[in-house]
Image 1 (cartoon, one colour):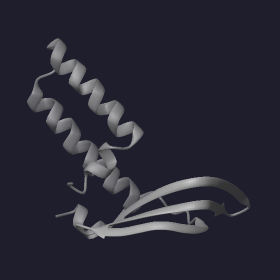
Image 2 (cartoon, one colour; image 1 turned 90 degrees about the horizontal axis):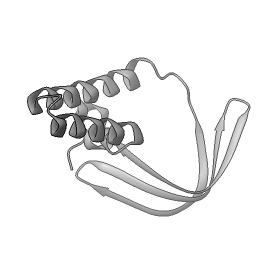
Image 3 (cartoon, helix red, strand yellow; image 1 turned 45 degrees about the horizontal axis):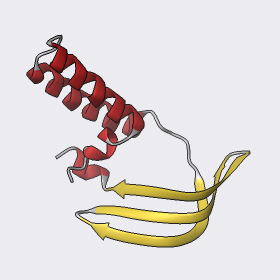
Length: 106
């Protein structure tokens, strides 16, 4: 799996891909331009995470499963608690996918 696919598999990435596919099928958009939009989406997501996100969140929970494959960590937590400043949220099960940000710029 390419590292950028992490963004494309998010809700916003899947909606963008579906919309672009529909536009290509309808003849509204050329496939080359749709590809360029996806490439720009990947770059924009990387830049936004690097430059605009300044918040920190503490996550605690029971580590159910973890794996490291192709420089990507995957963690599955049960009964997780997310804490951000004064806000706290409990989640029954959460999957966290993390990769080295240096790989995104290659």
